[in-house]
Image (cartoon, rainbow, N blue to C red; front, side, top):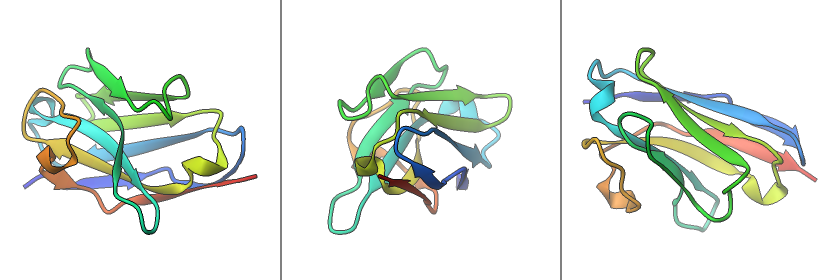
Length: 124
């Protein structure tokens, strides 16, 4: 069982930046692809970014491409989401997820473990 704990959310003005962190309990963290998702009330949880086991391959949704950067530090069992040029439409609960595979998926249901979420609010 992998436990994931997100941190770094908060309130920021439009145009500002935040860095989310997700610490994993799993000692074999490098065996897992990791993803960041977000969800707003009444909408489905959507994929924001994902990264393979080594950090060598990443994927971004069109809505965040060029503004968000996903990275990981396998020595620290942590995945990050650096967010810049934030927009009010980025407001959501952000979730970290782990997939029991070294290779990422774009399908939400293929992620096996989830964190509790962290709120990001971008004011205009």
